[in-house]
Length: 314
Ligand code: NAD
Ligand code: AKB
Image (cartoon, rainbow, N blue to C red):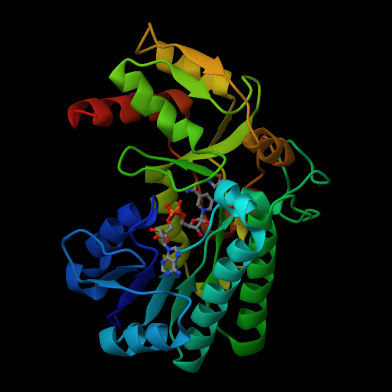
């Protein structure tokens, strides 16, 4: 088997910090290079600082580390992006173009680019949102992901670049903290529960959103990237789903293990973003094309989150 060398961009973030370790488990510590705009803490393999907005620095890193694949995780997420839309657009798009161009020019084997449920907007079906749906998002983040998906598809069809993508729902894990999204409450809530503190939720009690436990998200990413190319029929981005719940339902799940847990609801600007997203997702294309199947439901995730946060003294 050809030895792969993987360059991760945005490796210091919520998903990147966990995905880096998972990829090292598969490809070997030295073959997975974790990079980020911010200096990364010491870890089991090579790290570097890299600004994905610099095409030159990116090409230099690909050469220096003899990268054969790029996982491009750097992005400005939904809530942060709304504070400065043109800045968010610039970062999300310029970094993606730099990745696609360096991958095309240097004939890299594969590129991974995550999309999001943020591609959907008010015109989309709110329940079991289909794979091929109207995409008119309400946030600049969503607009950048719709554009990114189409550019990924274009590079695949026009240049034969093997770009793969998943539309992640809100990702929840104990290992890392989220970076400025609308689904962040569903991570924060567990940290408050374990500290025995009341939690103020920025969404209303009855707001359903699609979510996925980190372990499932990492496995989905590895399975997508390992699947034979002929099985990857969607070259924009695959719908992906694990569970769907409201703030009221996650609070009820936590109370099964932390009976005194208290929550109040104080919606802010993120409520409008959540209201524009689906409550649940139809991921049957991912299931039939490359065999996707989630393992965690809400209570299974709650048990695991609380167990790990408690054990590490959170
Ligand atoms: P995050 O905000 O936690 O991490 C992003 C990382 O990118 C940060 O460490 C940041 O320092 C880095 N970064 C920012 N600008 C950079 C630049 N110019 N050059 C290099 N690095 C830069 O994000 P995340 O939650 O880990 O998300 C990773 C990817 O997954 C993003 O594309 C995001 O849109 C997507 N996604 C995440 C979720 C989720 O729930 N976490 C859901 C859907 C999609
Ligand atoms: C966000 O809330 O912005 C992200 C996402 C679903 O893309 N977690």
